[in-house]
Length: 328
Image (cartoon, rainbow, N blue to C red; front, top):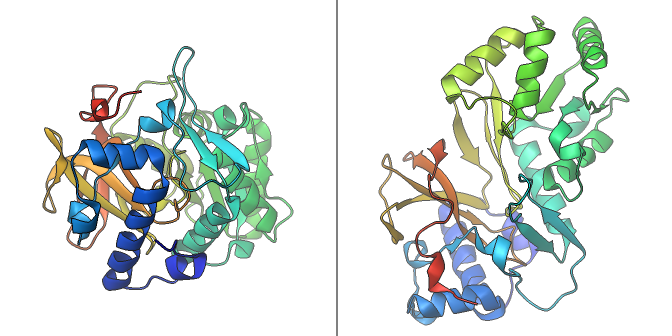
């Protein structure tokens, strides 16, 4: 089976193109990804009989902790790892061609926000900066480099400096995007409140055990008040994915054209749900061409008829039902 190239994946512009490419990727990965092939075999799915997206099996995301998820035999260039507390097994996304990731996040950002050069990018991502292997830091570093503003950069715990920079940006009326992990944005907003309605505040999720969990409405209200922003933007991504979805407010996310979210029945992991029903979030990420493009996450959510979605929480259990379909 021929592997789709970047041109095919990143030029998708309608549902039929997405479906055709997804089925092509499925057949390629069902043959070339050993872990995924064994998972499909144990589900007793006939690969040749899969004719629409609803029949494609989704690999539980926990397999990125226990197995090498690779399609093909190309050499691994780099490895992205998830953050986690001591004693936890972290996910490992083995990357054989990092240019697919670059292409994906660059194009997605441009679709939702326009040319990166037009923004001053300020990144408040302390917990990610303090370790190696973060795909989020890789993306943020690239955005900072591609920004036309020399003031773009990272802030660890130097909130004084970030506060001064934000005031400078506001006075100069420069378009500014502050991307930050949730707990760090909350800490900053409490200590250095500012009224900067033009500022794009983008939270990437994650309390990392630093603060109590908050529902989205409460979180966004606190951040809106602290930054004087009309809406709080959000980025939905993870170590195991090469693509991101973005929300420009109200917690409703939209995907890039090569990414799609489907919900599954929480009691039957191989059954998909209709729109507007809460279920486990399955992600098709066609940029994951060299690992697995069909991932069953541990998030709960709801998909709307236009393809947008909300994230409503996470599974209580650490492993999704169905993981025992592949042993060894």
